[in-house]
Length: 125
Image 1: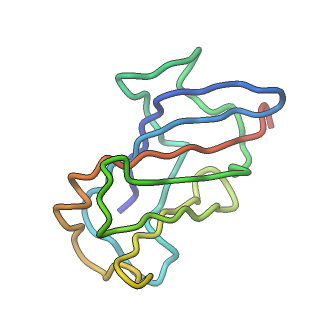
Image 2: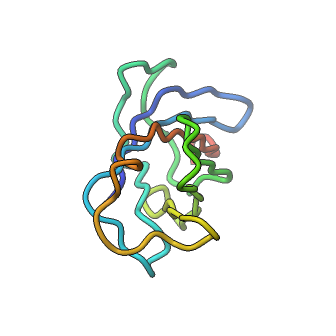
Image 3: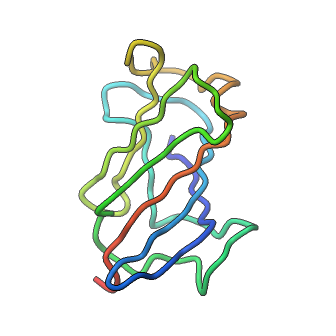
């Protein structure tokens, strides 16, 4: 099931936009497809949003993508996967020893985690 993205900030710098966001997992994780989908075209504005507008004016995939646990939990690791478009990025969930999370429901520890990220997009393309 696609991950929900809520945009917390957008900062313009030259020809780039740095986007801060929160990730909310739900439903099931499926192995073998390169991670759960991070679709930036369906991102919403987070209640703590800072910036002029909570939209990403770019049709290109991010040139940089990062995700991490803000809670400090160490049972799971999150790894970003840049897609071909803003709608086809993904987040891999790994357990100990770099093993991908199995197919099935997200564990309570992942659902309760505070997952944050940043993405850098080229402006106006």
